[in-house]
Length: 120
Image (cartoon, rainbow, N blue to C red):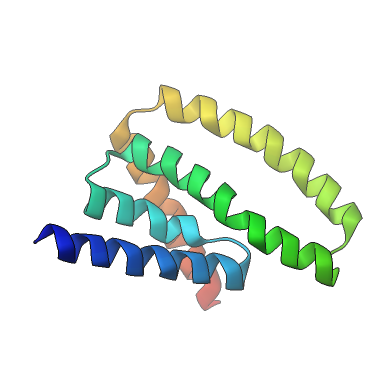
């Protein structure tokens, strides 16, 4: 695949990740991780870590829209933030300690479970 085609695919895919994240308020990482592996050749740990950073950055405009339209409940936001911060710290520690194969298996199981849950 030529570099120009690879770059075009990367930008189109990135736009799709942003659209999905904007519509659903998350979930773009589920697409971002495979894209980073496929198009940039990153390993599992690099893909997941990079995806988290990308999701944080692209969530900023979404946050601004939600704050200006007051589309959420502040009490829920505070409680969710506390849980997500604690979970994020635990997840970061696990990412460093687990091997690439285990991370990949966990990711596949989570994606599969989410897909099954959405069907029912």
